[in-house]
Length: 297
Image (tube, rainbow, N blue to C red; front, top):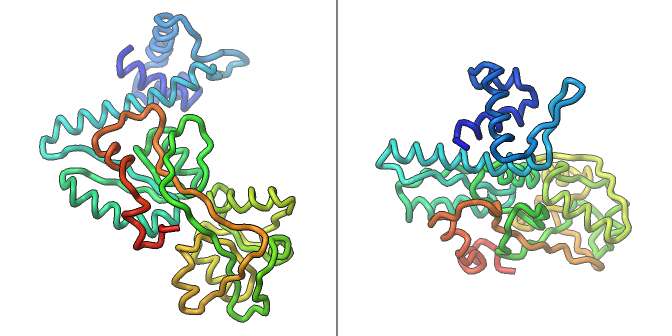
């Protein structure tokens, strides 16, 4: 199988339409169809089922898709590096929101200092988006708050993170209170797909409680400001709200019945080629190196 075969397969998988894939690749439709049949014939398998004028990927195709993305990406990177002798490569680094805000700037500065010829590209998004980009080989490695469940992703724990309940400084609730008490209050949450949101929902379910947020936002600072105005309470990483607690913009309500802690991870795809830089990041002791940033629980 050639790299061109893989590119054609990936485009057909994305479009699930031979004609549209051919247009995107600037090829004829028969040539695209022939390339897919060549792969199927050579390996003795079926990549796509064809019925009711539709194209449907088989389980083999689904498994092959992510591997093909990795191979194509690595091939493209190799070509760029060969064409530019002064460039030693690209590191596509991802992180979820709070780790991206408080950990990544220092880490990227350290990477730049050790590897001046390395092109570091950073993506900071919610957990679902970061996991998706690892699976589709749009990221090489990422830092994710809380659990990572996809079996195609390999994780290493790096430190323990704490979440806190915050309220307006004018609230009459001083705590400690129970999580059931919090569930009866107006709750302001991160958006669905956020690892913080997933963790909180899981904690509520474990305590047999229902969570009905009145406000959802991708911005933690928007939630903090809404809490300050007395709209409701929120549960956010302590690292994000620490400054606002110190200046009295919001106040913490302590819980008596649950401990809101989670383990954060560094994550790669199980099929990812581990370069020297990735191996360096995977072997780093983040607990020690970032103790002065508050990650010393």
